[in-house]
Image 1 (cartoon, helix red, strand yellow):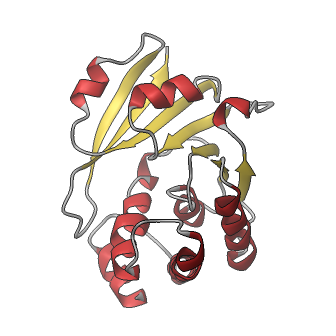
Image 2 (tube, rainbow, N blue to C red):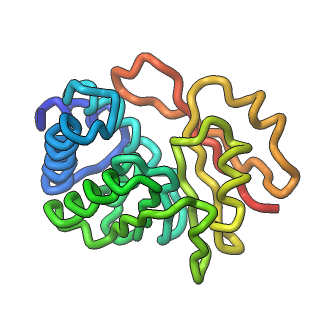
Image 3 (cartoon, rainbow, N blue to C red):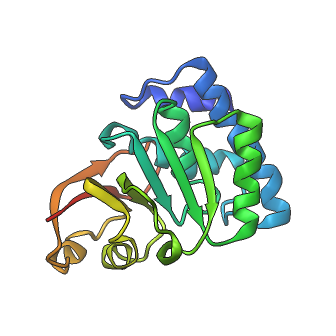
Length: 205
């Protein structure tokens, strides 16, 4: 598994140390172990998880700006856990409303010694942070408009929204509300993934 991850990473511009690679594998093993009992992800094959979860999360890393992030609807920690492994000097709040996911993430934090993640069980509208985040990240929302509707209160004054999307982003961009503007749309290349991926970066107006 480690060799496959190294091969996948080598097809990108990502730079991970041996320790970071080991942490990614340890996360994957935990996810696979917990998944049979808790049904955390519909992807069952660890090799498939490597591409659809680990690499799909890591390719976002080069586009993040700032030091404090929230991953909204993180599920089992996607992409937040992988981004926290990649950026040990940045802090990630991992927000989800389901207790079983937060219990899993607390175990991940403990076993991987990830001091820069904070699992938080809450509905997004109930989370009122004292200071806003530099980045609001999500791959869970059905549409960008849904994400903005629920998460409008979360970024700091100069914070950004990072929406991970599939192929058809232009229609969603055309329907954006007037309190945001598109900073960029980045096509993401995930090795061995037979699907399109985009990162839509939005700035509050």
